[in-house]
Image (spheres, rainbow, N blue to C red):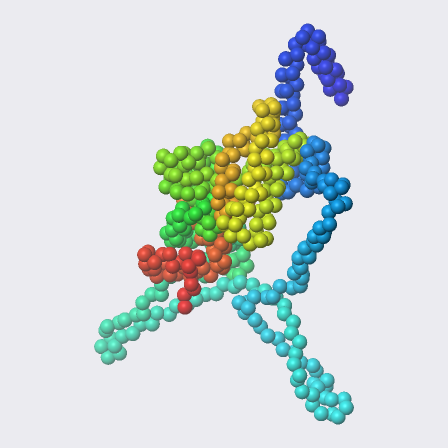
Length: 519
């Protein structure tokens, strides 16, 4: 502590002497450098604090935002009427709208699709005799109460008997019933078990080793290699469906894209592993398509997106840039306000209240979107509302961004956020042009949550092929979610049909939004 105080005193003395010698520019440069360093450290401390307490939400208390604006002197005040006008105005005071009735918090009705077991209870026999006349009491109705029970999943052995026939007299001409079609020909697992394993791993994020332990409790011990082979076979079988989902996503009015890393075993690497990438593509919030690439190089997403026409909502990853230059693709870039906001949120968290100005404007943009949703506005009406209310806010924000940028040191944390908005501004304002475009890419980011949770549990993919197959199953389960289809029933039925030789020309009938269960 004493040493730190001595160093501080020596530094101040050195700065004083520099000022006395007229070295003002050098002192200012040093102060600017120290401020940049301090801002960066504040940002890092804020991130570490959020990580330490496990808080990843970027919500900002409106009261906190208002306080920061007041400290800046930038709080917007509503215009006040002149006193005389208020006194002479004879117009009636408008009645505020009645508060919206909120639904009650009672129990939700239980779905009719669940199987039901009825338990009937009657009073004891002695209570069924009338106390007055001694006659028998008649049933006059009942009271009903619903509860939910759980029956653990159980394994069962299916024995298939293929009967053989022959002529009893000649003892020749033996015939036998044909084999039953299975998903894995002559395999041990039925379609229901295979679907259960796929959904458990990629829908419920359970590693295969844990699935093995669960199955062992039910009475059968399967080698992990067997489970791995089953998962691989199903991924290969279902790949044409995933590929078709990718084609339809590419044709969507709005295509959103994002990516995340995944550890992949690599025997050729000195570390024994490498960082591959899973790319998520969401078409019209309907088609969820995943692709795996061994690296994050731009060539990976470019191979899929190079023929894209129309809106493409992405973050500012430079690997997407050539998609918007018209070389092959003629995609139109749509920016993400959640990414832009993140810069200013982190700056505000580090203690720089100037970021509150940007956060306030962005919050107003989202408030307008909520208003449009509450009014159930269609795309054209939403676009009109955005032109009337959102565009002026965008213009105000951009003026502040440019003015602040010109005065901000190049390496400051706030400058990075300002630079992002300036570089992405054309993409960030595209939502004004089309009421079907969202403000941010959060819908696509949510698709990657399954991957993020899964990799925490199963840790890695065994090789590139395994990672590619995981993308296939993520595509089908993700698209099932958007179609409101139960993934286990879907996979069980579709895998069986594909094994039975479903024609490729009718593949669209098996896609989750079009799927009808067999029988």
